[in-house]
Length: 630
Image (cartoon, rainbow, N blue to C red; front, side, top):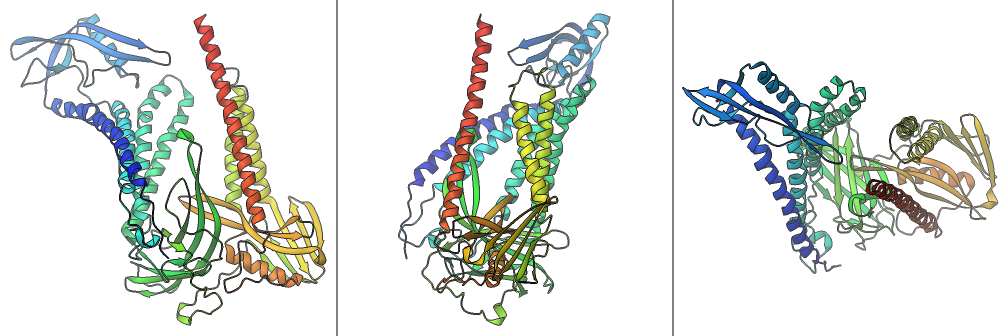
């Protein structure tokens, strides 16, 4: 099968290069003429000689604007050097006005006091050119950090755009298979995103710390003025320290494991068939090593435009298994063997809306843990699935056991009981509670400050309402348990939420099918974790939850198979491929379509709310402008 690739992105790549060069040159200009010039002057002035000077004039210029006031200390002083008299007016290394801290106010105070008392001040004179002098040769770190913001933000953004544009402008061959046309896949040595992730982590950490660097120098002055809430500003450098530690962890991982390329067998992975392969670790062989592999089919799409543009990833299918561990050429070899259901989308070139397949390999180790993520080629190659065959013993993969903290299956007096205990989604529950507490606290703070600050009246209620919903969701996720008793009579479902019990019964003759879908997912550090939900569909089309929080399609299929046996349902016919963990019947696309429709409704609601907020601010700005005009 051959596919002709579209090379139309070559022109857009060149436009991106030109666009990025503009930002790159702006950042370079700030670096050379701003930050670089200041550092160079500071280095030159370290060898200048001190000399007493008489202050002739001292002034503090104020430049007011609508939102701020900047200051500039100016002076005129006369000094003697090598028997000759000179006059200068340079106060510091920089000569522009600003409002970073109180440097200008302090210099003005020092010079004006000397003028009033007719006392000499020490200035620094260039021995090679005595006409050049400065009253204060110290480097202002706060101003340096402020200038660094423009260098890092403009230069870093421009450099990233140029790099991305150059990659897009590379021509791709036409008339070849897409997995061979992609240089990252062509040799079947697929590299992880570890190196890219390391550089991205360092770039983000440097940009954040550059943006928050001036805060370190502003906080002491604000606290000296009695502005206690200035302690809140300390969160920015603390977050920056955390980002630096995160980047350092990525660096240590890279140094320990290196590239760790992945090979697929067969190449590429087959839709409705086998996705298998392995990787060699630069790690001494340990028989007890447990490495978790997660294979995901993700839908990547963007919403919004401009500054509100966001990229999202939604898991369409996901499965997990323990890797097979054996001695390898570099120390340890990890192997995996997944079976994929038919009907899922193949790998696509990155764009605004595309699909990709990823494999994540993780293992907890002494020192630095293993965490690698690969984007792999999975296509409908037409190869028959080997799901019906037992793999050879040396390639047998460990069977994933059902986690007891998620579901406990045990015989009951009549049939089988499936018990989903409390705290089975503890991390998600705690995340919802933390976000709910944050939003609720912000709403309470804004409510108290609503009369003292000029802000829209609905802000406290919006923050408080969102916080309350998040808190309720976290409490429900934390404190609910589910018990399902399945037998030839039917399914008895009992949900308990903090002692409140809700029960229902579905007779066996009313059960039409069992279905599994991706219930919810979390994303952290570029890794997506999907959890499956089981639904019982009755003859009236109602879908009743009989399982949730299951980690992966295999776990969902295992629970569903036992529940199907307890109810006496026939297994769905799936041909030569593996049982469909994504959907169990022809009616399965309906929930996914309903989810898409619900997602579109939510996006329209968000857009309308955003439009209303924008309209409010526009009306508020115009009303203030009209009042100021009159």
